[in-house]
Length: 231
Image (tube, rainbow, N blue to C red; front, side, top):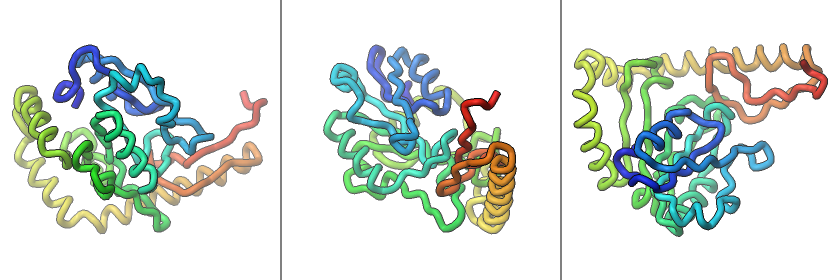
């Protein structure tokens, strides 16, 4: 994405912690990464008001990732409304990495940023079959949103690779058409692992905080608070 839309010397706003490729791709495009800390006091959402004015003036791209890896936070529609308004105000393109959008359970649903009015003008959303359909490493996914940005992304992609092996494309179609039942089975397993891990930590350290759940890895719980004396 940075190669498609970010000129050298321009800033990309990146969540921290987050997927390391956001930063490396920015550097590869000769852009300037600016890290937005995801803090517990802010519910692991970026604080747009804390970004310095001189950084905003030079910012052209912002990555978001919800449901989030590694914090497992799920952003609501109100946050995306704020993000879209922020992007419009400062002329920033949002690249929303929604790789984990289907990995929710206990009735929790993760909204799409494209549900927000005006989002299609300044945002694209990226989806991967890696997490939802256990196709990690097969490199199958898609992007939706602003048509002009998608055209730029397609131009870059067409000069970087030659497409996906056809059998994998057919497998991806099958997953999208008939994979919901297997997804539900996997989500049940992930929830059971989360519950077991949280129970174990409660026994070990006496307390842990379990908030609204989402899967990031097969056995990761949402959050564990360890005592200061923990080694």
